[in-house]
Amino acid sequence: MEQIKFLLLIFNVSRGTMSLFQGTYDVIVVGGGHAGCEAAAAAANMGCSTLLVSMNLQNIAQMSCNPAMGGIAKGQIVREIDALGGYSGIVSDKTAIQFKMLNLSKGPAMWSPRCQSDRMRFAEEWRLMLEGTPNLDFYQEMVSGILTEGNRIVGVRTSLGVEIKAKTVVLTNGTFLNGLIHIGEKQFGGGRAGESASFGITEDLQALGFESGRMKTGTPPRVDGRSLDFSKMIEQPGDVNPSKFSYSDVTQPLKQQRSCYMSYTSEVVHDLLREGFDRSPMFNGRIKSIGPRYCPSIEDKINRFADKDRHQLFVEPEGWNTVEFYINGFSTSLPEDVQFRALRSVAGFENVKFFRPGYAIEYDYFPPTQLKHTLETKLIDGLFFAGQINGTTGYNFQIQNGDFLLENINYRYIQDANSHALEFMRANPGSVSAIATLEIEALALEYELKLRTL
Ligand SMILES: Cc1cc2nc3c(=O)[nH]c(=O)nc-3n(C[C@H](O)[C@H](O)[C@H](O)COP(=O)(O)OP(=O)(O)OC[C@H]3O[C@@H](n4cnc5c(N)ncnc54)[C@H](O)[C@@H]3O)c2cc1C
Image (cartoon, rainbow, N blue to C red; front, top):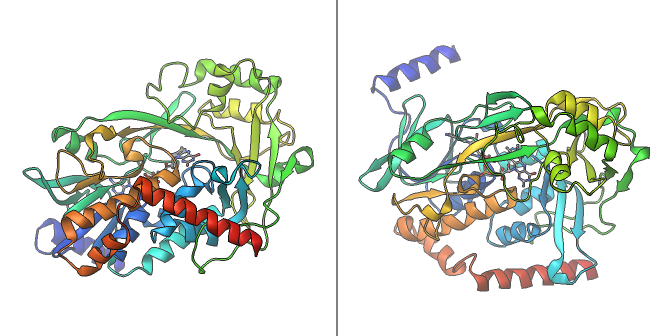
């Protein structure tokens, strides 16, 4: 019955007899990744009528790679976002399985909060937070194009042909635009392992005069913790007195934590990896695009730092209850058999079983020189880009993108819609301006010191 209803709906929609969407949204956010979630939350909380369209609503806020938030030069961004009313700090605290303040041996300006997250709980918590946010609608479909009138955005078009009107559109497509996954000599389309790539938007933007490029990033294999020998590794427990990200009382520091572990590659491991170099898309020219600076693959590391006889590997649980582990430091696009053989030579991994092999992904991005400092595109009024579509990388930078641009959207386009928007502007003048950032940093330090002296 449900299927018949759905088919009738599509039939009517395609005949133009019925529209799924009436009226014009203040903001449509395309993509429910880190940038999109934060953007949608910020827009809706400012009183803008907001629609979040994502290809798979089951995978909202999915962590594509490392199940972790924060870290050096990143943790403070999560706190900045929290200070501005974003959700990432709260979600990170609620779903953390370990918390560490990195760089504690250095001065307070260098302290960097980082948490290990429960991957499944993180995505679930984000979805619950968004569902509890007024003014926010959801729709699952692939946006295949944008609608413009002259040099103004007026909405989006989906792959089913549904047209949705909006005053502003925020594209946060991440690694999905014409995404191509590489494992050794194998290639297949995808935006992330197990998820389809997204088509149409790049071509629409190019036709409007946008310049696009290709980038690549990669991820390590995930393994079965029951097949590991942790006694051969070095335990990495969380902080004795864990802190947290959010300034609010909604979350509390962790009372229990899960440990991570550390092991090392060796010359033997490096030799085994080198055996696969001729089948590596990185080295045989199949991957042509450049990678984000901070995500080197293991093959890249042993190639570029040939004098190093070992590299650190962090063995990180993917959640409270799962046996799946993430092998931080072993990002690779080498053939799966090479990955497997090499990893089996690492201490503690002699009997390792794979959950998923590592892979690299190439995707379209749009050089951010095409943006104003507000993240609005110079070519199309009301069209904004946030997140990895701008060629940046990392969960934490994407959320900042998402939060920051909304302030600007609201100021320029929606401010007449309601006074709440103006209140927000007064309360948050230039959220990521140098002064505001310093103030937030000072607040973060004060907060941290308070927690430590409690
Ligand atoms: C293999 C891999 C390894 C990575 N390694 C790391 C890492 O170790 N550390 C780190 O910090 N970052 C890593 N990243 C990057 C990290 O995933 C991103 O920086 C961050 O998730 C990007 O956030 P985003 O919101 O821009 O996009 P994403 O998280 O990629 O989300 C994009 C969202 O948009 C949706 N979408 C895309 N196109 C459409 C469309 N046309 N219509 C509707 N919905 C659409 C997708 O379904 C998805 O929900 C990695 C990414 C990948 C894929």
